[in-house]
Length: 282
Ligand code: C2E
Ligand code: MG
Ligand code: MG
Ligand code: MG
Image (cartoon, rainbow, N blue to C red; front, side):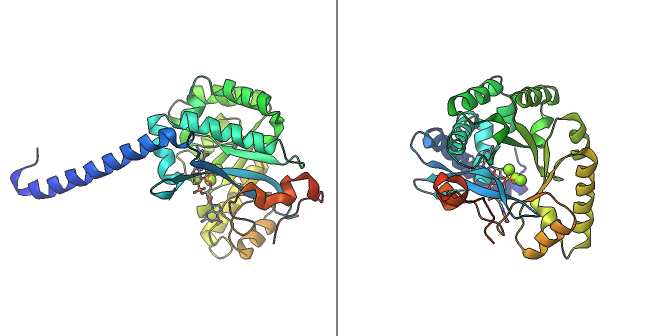
């Protein structure tokens, strides 16, 4: 226990922790019913070919509207869902919903789904993906799974096996948030990635910041050497996009090309009636 002189501070700290723990338990509890109560929904963000501006696919992002708190950010609730295990149920719902939706699109664009470590390492995950593809009829080559490298650290052997089995189903695997993890380079060798997504933090002001530019150029060089396409995340300005085009980056995603939104927003790409080839909104 705290010594007498530090007691006040200790008590305050303890009380504050208590609030945070209760807060967390509350969210954890509410999350268990969120899917069943229809509080979760998906938004879609376009991924574009840098040269042509064409939309080539969509990343699926989860949204939770809490009945009292309103919108809770996935950055806040995903870590809690991972710890409680609720991510297994929620993640399966995301996957099924995204594949079901994508299977209705006239253009065979790809759909990228974020998958957490807990899911990858769960014993039946590959089976679940297989079932979802079968049930929804989505062609496996249209599904991309995004994972962060931190996902791989906990059990590298098992993660490796799971990724290989997933690839055997015919889908693609992207390394998300590249550059922010512990050992990006060795992970590129150890795991069968099909794409690298450069984290948004390196794209910020890449056209004006020499350090960011040097890092992005080297990642693009790495991609060329490994034969892996590179997607830049978080592209917000014309200047950033121009830099990426000049440096032969393959794909880009960010507020400049489109914010995450309800799928209906992108009717021209995802609906048969509109017909015309997909092009990015300027
Ligand atoms: P992420 O997979 O790296 O997704 C990109 C995040 O950047 C998204 O935040 C997106 O809305 C945001 N973003 C996109 N373009 C821009 C831009 O130009 N500027 C800025 N400032 N931000 C941009 P979001 O939707 O809040 O998601 C945060 C993270 O939560 C995701 O990062 C992902 O790690 C996780 N996440 C979201 N949905 C799911 C899900 O269904 N399952 C799992 N396991 N994780 C998810
Ligand atoms: Mg992602
Ligand atoms: Mg990312
Ligand atoms: Mg992220």
